[in-house]
Length: 166
Image (cartoon, rainbow, N blue to C red; front, side, top):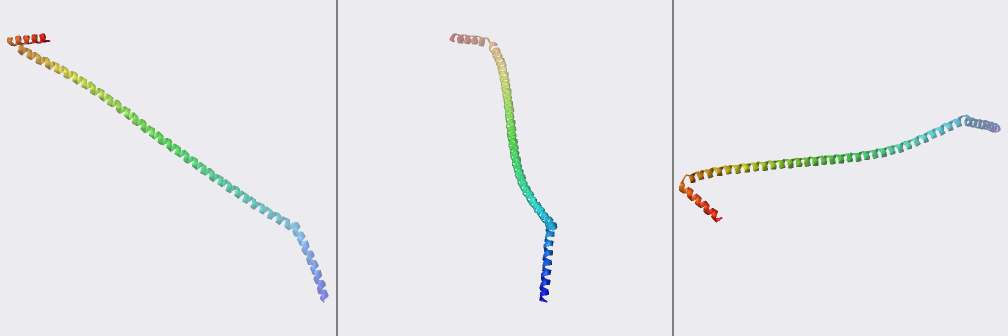
């Protein structure tokens, strides 16, 4: 019986081995290739996804750098515009001051000319008034002097003496 069990075990072992080899061949032919190709495809998909993620990461870094550069340019342009606006403001204020100063100088010159003209007119009027008063006073004096004969003679003698001395 031991022999029978050994033979039975060997036969069973042989058939099991043969079935295993056939199963491996069949699996290799029909199952392993599709499984391996699916695994390779998945591996390539993961690799492509990683590459795409890396490219996206680089693009994001480039976009961030571009955005930062654009922000810097916008800030610089804003500063330039603000500087120009300040310069225009300062120029406008300076121009307004110059214009106001020129207008003030013109007004002062006109006022001085008017004052000078009024002064000349007043002096001329004063001279005219003084001359008129002097003539009136002289006329009254001459009338009073000439109304008396003694005073007339005395006045003529006095004038002649003055004329002789000069």
